[in-house]
Length: 279
Ligand SMILES: [Fe+2]
Image: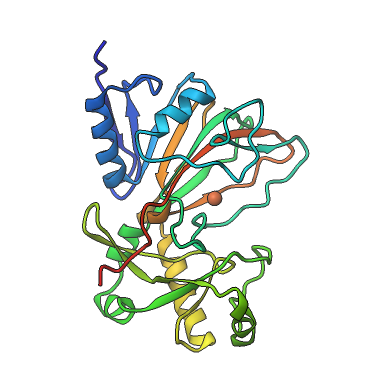
């Protein structure tokens, strides 16, 4: 039977709640609409989806190619379906604005979560649109940063380590150098520029800039991207699927539900291209 899919924007900048769709059975016409909607809205929310892990994986193939998860699969699920399981009396430690995998040449393009078990309240996730964040900068700032590049590397310190890398630390990284990405990238899907910034533990410095100056600039851009005008706060319900463009967003999983349990399934899609400024 033909499904009558519709959607409602969550804020003018980001997010859409999609309704009238069974994610286990999406026809070709709606698949194309969803691909386009993800580009324009950045985050898609699907409520009340009683689907199996395998159906979740199949659904995500609409948006790209899933890869074997680095989160441990469980319950006999395929390698592409990872599990984020916070047990009772365990505290979630990822509690800050970030993008996943910016320290790779081709970071995961799209991420998705399926809520299997949620706490009675709390555990919301915030998302912000890095295209809207770039758009919201003063023209003088855009001019200053358009041709800069930043160093990205998997950090070993905790989120509370405020400082980005010192010059000495960077020099020590010679054997395993950071990945360089443009600070301002161009999204070829819609021709929009976006800020490619991340939390200090992943995005350590500006290429060729003194540490103090680069730290100040990165810090101001990272905080600018978090403004409410560019973001929204998602409250989960059981059986909710959320799909987002990882490299065009930052997300913030709020760790406020201790001592409750939470279990999410995750499917990540391969990054097909290196973030580029189009030059
Ligand atoms: Fe994350």
